[in-house]
Amino acid sequence: MSKRPIWLCGIAGALLLTSQAGFGQSDPNPPKPAEPAGAASATPGAPGPEIRDPWLAEWLRLTPDRRPRPLVAGRDYGMDEKTGQFIWPKATPEVHEGQPFPGELKTWDQKSYAKNVDVLGFYPGVDSPFHAWANIADFGGKRYLYIHDRDYLRILDVTDPRHGKIVYSRGAVWGPKGGSEKFDANNVHDYLGGATIVWSAKLGKPIIVASFEIGRYGLMTEKMEQPDKVAAQRHYNSLKGFRVFAMDGPLPSQWRLIATRTTDYKHPDAPIGQQQGSGSLDSPEYYGGKYMILSSAPDDSYALTEYPNYLYSPGYQVWDMSDPADPKFVSQIAVPGQIMGNKEHENAYLMNPRAGNRTSWMGSRMPIFLPKPLEDGGKIGFGAMGGLGLWSFDLSDPANPRILGSVNTPPAFAGTEFDNADVSQYERTGYVLTSGYPMNRDCYEPYKDVFVVDARDPAHLKVAGKLPQPQVPPGAPFTHFCQRGGNFGPKRSNSIGQPGTWRQGIIPYSFYNAGVQLFDVSNPADPKIAGYYVPRLANASELPEYTLGKGVLAIFTEYDRNIIWAFTENGAYALSSPLLGAPVLKAPAKAWPPR
Picture (cartoon, rainbow, N blue to C red):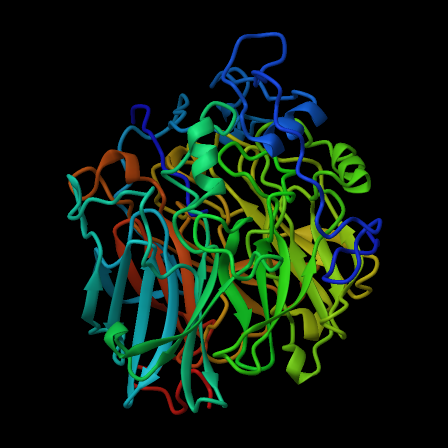
């Protein structure tokens, strides 16, 4: 396989910043850095682009330049001919092209592999080749699957998952020549981002809460070299926040917009183009009760991040959703090392070995994960904060949340670290799983372990182990998944808003070119691989070369029907496994979301 371009998805024990007080008592409205007096070069001492953005210029002045050097395949990393295993890079820059190495397959593997998993159905072309969010809602005795990301939305009637039907389609359908509709990432206004569907007791019907954030692909590749694109993100031409829709039926024509909010809570009336911060990232953590938690940077001072195409280090927000038509801001959460202009935050950031690497994502990408909803007596939450590590929070008073503890690991960049946390086993065991995911192709970055964290004492988090790496299935034409090409590593496990309840002892993970991996975590300190489904990889007869190699990029599990939906670059699989139980091939006994 030749070099291929890639697209990037959209993708400790201290006080914290809230709406009332701050870490180190920071000013809730920190002063904007002085405008750069002249050209600020991205590389000190060398000619370079002018840094016009004051926050970006201040970040450059604050941090050293520790960019990792490019590595040479076969010398610095690659296959070990004696063992048949892969020697991982120690640190790499973020790159936009594939990095094939000696011993990698020359064509995309067309075999599929399964253990303890059966395929119920496959639906080609129902998702984007780059990313997929999913939701489920039941109407009139039928079950509907929503697959979406920005410019596209597919709604499938999956009452019988073996014979799903598309009932609504918006946005491009992809083929070997690309998408059927032109997509301009710089002009995306009316879209459905990460979303959560819940039942509103107040309205007596389901509602959708949809996140609106700055796009994470197709807008900017290097913030130190594209001042016009930096300015465009500061003055983004779409909402930075979230919208709430009442669902009178399964189709968008039956939804009513009932609320719009910006996450720029200091300027709640700011119009589009003047709203600060990142907007709301990914799917809101919300169960239909009083409190909702978002991932968000509220303003431009949340600027301490290394990621080359992103300007913010998102924290968290708590919102009061007692009346979903009138959401009210409750509190903002930050951890040390996020806020520019606050010396204690800046010092904490500089103590992080990732500072200056011009590569690492810092801050959250998803909301705080709750083992139990706050309305049901939950008090503890866990936040994956990229290169800042995993954090635990006391949310017993949502207006005044407190940091309890944190844990971090040695840097593993490029790629994203501490992207998500799986709290499905926490109530039973006291353990949390957490991982990042690969962004570079062809294993041109350190492996992204799934860490098992002992959180029985949330104030003293400890890494207790790791999930095993997927092993090559019998009959495969390679000895290590890196040789299969594309991306290899974990993406995410449980999604927000999955029907039913988490299954104890079993966790499914999407694993890119290693497909869906099912882990036996009945004893989290001794995890094992119990099953998998590794689908064939799409090829250039189906999709453009630059979209290929992702494999399973997202999953969504119907625990009430024992069905796993696996989304690949070329379609969606409906899977079942005896590890979850016999699949239900008709409408469930109880409607989702729960009334």
